[in-house]
Length: 418
Image (tube, rainbow, N blue to C red; front, side, top):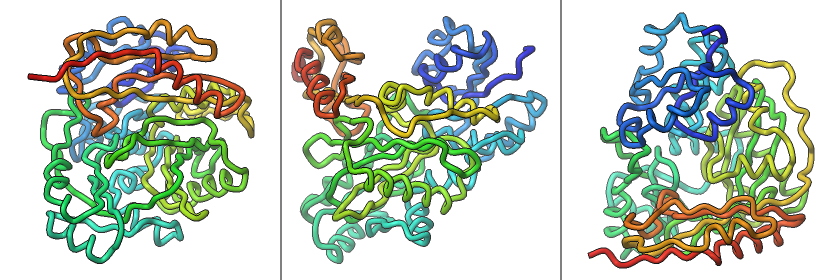
């Protein structure tokens, strides 16, 4: 391989497509868990992706995996190392350290991956956090609820996509919610081996929800966006939509970016991208969680469309150590709305209306991820959503209306499972 390779941890087609725009064929080494390669048929999926030169099976989510990899492949001399998915971030950070390349820093991503520790560290740095404690069973959840009037949220300390997360309004819900939250099924996206279970119970902060996406160069933000978020109704905080950029006063957007920068300083984040989630109550941003990887749910694409800027290319420039990053605009030129589709649990009988929805003016994406005979589940995590629409318009309200109109044309018929 004449070109120094880029090592990518985790199979995300959009990331490979972005690299193919400026990297030569065969210049990407993709590392993925063996179970995930099998379950998602990654070898077949990447066979027609010329930029991928090698697919490496590696249990990167195990302790010491990055150092073991470096011991065997220390002579690779990669140009960059990056994880696109949540569970690959510690491996990528450590591998970047070993190769002497830009990265988030292992300490920073370990704090991001542990929501209990992240609360402790950021609270000490002056960031508002909800009251929170680790729990090992229903009795401890009940004790927390007794001392904290109002709703609480039960969630894993080390998972993603709202898996195993539920809002509780009454102690009578504890036993059922505990059993439900223990069933943390992420299907084809995770290895088959068990993941240690650690649970948190926290004060439920009611307010407006946002995320902040920052590109960061050696601890210094070089571009920032604020995304507005909305949730499906019910006890599970799963996102039903996003608006980029959030239609909020400049002062609030600046406050959210400043608080995110404070989180970065608290954990010692180095170089890369962060996706930090907040709830604003009575003007105060409360930290939900933070991740040192790409934002999911199409937010990366939405940022590029809203600001008309090469946001993803800027990320790769940082990871490659290139001197020219940006420039990036201060304001978006238009609004982008993303809306998700859910259906009842059952078996899909038919799917109609997707092409008509995608053809609507302003709609840039409409996709359904299920087909006849597929099984669907009630929405308990992000993985249970079955479709998405994205629309572009001059204002957030118009973009949101267009995305909802598109999903309104989509019909997914489901019959109950027997």
